[in-house]
Length: 314
Image (cartoon, rainbow, N blue to C red; front, top):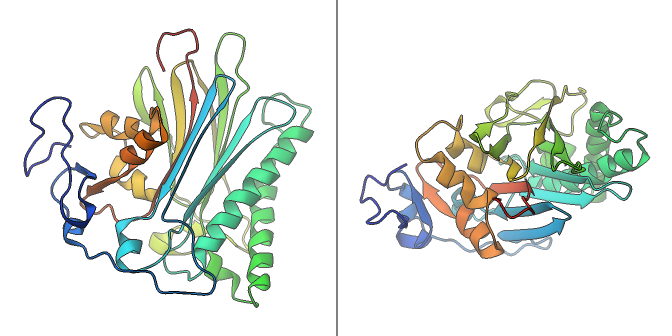
């Protein structure tokens, strides 16, 4: 991930972009987006989501950070940010539920769809978790969740004057983290409902991209990715694991995931830890603000970090 147009002059120096994206980190070679013209949004009655949102909150030893930025493509075409995230805390146990959604670029109202999907998913899963008799996550019905989100998207489309529900098309990825055990470990379950988002674990072994390729089962949209709403019940890709102290789980949309790849490229740890280990909202935004060849989509990352409160690391 060295800058072939001029590497950093010292180990702590990060190459920075020029042009309209001046000051953003540069990943790899100089990108054409550095010469991009920043166009204003057209005025519309419905408006659009903010170009940037970020959050950080502590839940016991768990820290949740989230950031979503409008990417160069939507900036160049005067489209709103089409990514969304949401998160919440279960009432009955110290479990955090997070969700990310990536609205389909070609769907006119996908920014609305992504926001509805992420919010509905978190509300639905929190309800299942709070009603569960199991301290784990076995009572979460992921298939039911997919149907509930599709229903919410259709209802929202109807409330917008009866627009076709497909114009709200979006992906959806959800995770449950916690509760933290007495020995400091935190279980997690990640479910890719539909789409091509990426899940990343950052721990003592380094950066690991979790399995589960983009799958069929739903409306086929951009790049063959299945989306919601759908009349076909999707088959969620569900995987579970444990986060020891000083490790974290991130869900990221393809604006970050495409640069990340399989997690094996040189320099990927510095890139990923720009958002997984950010200590402030400013660091979180800076870690997600970069230019890289081909990285033109919106960027969203939600991380749940199991902090090492013993004072070791994390």
